[in-house]
Image (cartoon, rainbow, N blue to C red; front, side, top):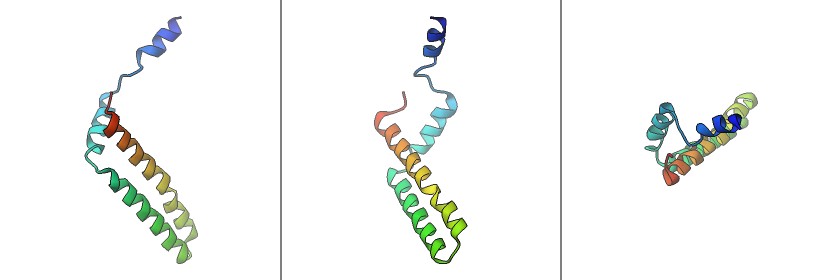
Length: 82
């Protein structure tokens, strides 16, 4: 039972660093992340066309990360930081 108690004590609490990051990222409009993600896709396509396959793959891998950060940003704006 002690293990359960210790594990549940930290639930719902956020650190100061997390709150600071969320306060800064919440200022960025949600559409910005979508625009940057689409830009990364376009840049990857352009690099593929000019036969820079390795660089195109590298830039193309940014897209999911950018979109996930945008999704997290939107969720924090809607539900707030608890």
